[in-house]
Image (cartoon, rainbow, N blue to C red):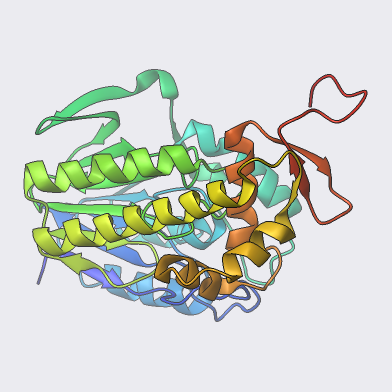
Length: 323
């Protein structure tokens, strides 16, 4: 059987995917290297969980299993209760998570109101410490991260601070989670600057190492080096077009509302802007709402009026020396 198997998750952004136990979260991927099986993403929801466990049954003569998530978000790590079942099936099972994700995961598990059954596997997590990061030169590209046998866990922040791209040199395959999802970051903890830097590093790695399989979080995997490079380049160009349009909107302004930005984006005929608006806007908060908030924060602007739906200014509000 092939060394990589896809267990498909959601392919179209849907703001209500967490409302039912029968929903699907992210794609999961199974990668076999020798007698070791790597599971990339536990996903979310009962149907996905059962299909993922069924897929693991196809891999016989496996002595060791690693569960590795590209980042902590619910739709990628919410099915980590599979660790108990994996422990009954395989002699040795490990679940590695960057310690930078620990507080976010704990906070979520303490406060979640999701309708689906969620278990991020905190009790079984083996934490990857920031101080134990190594440097890897892959081709001419320098990454920081960790090595877990055949898997490189490469730090590619931006979507979240803990985001990893998981690279298998022998298979020439990389799994990037949500790093390459347009209108990214779509959560307030992300960074537009960092996600573009991470995308550029992944593209350079594909070019240098001849990567020919790209597994992304929510859409079909891309196969073929040139197709992968074109896919990443398209993402970068769209993301930069969105940032450029927002820069035009706020130019020469000292007080701009989030809704004003959205109104101005709707006036644009640029294909990338139209696509950004089509994803899950006008749902509120849409990915665009969150993206614009990150855009303002990275410009050093401050939210001066939350009651008006979010108004931002480069100046501190009166009688407020710092925020």
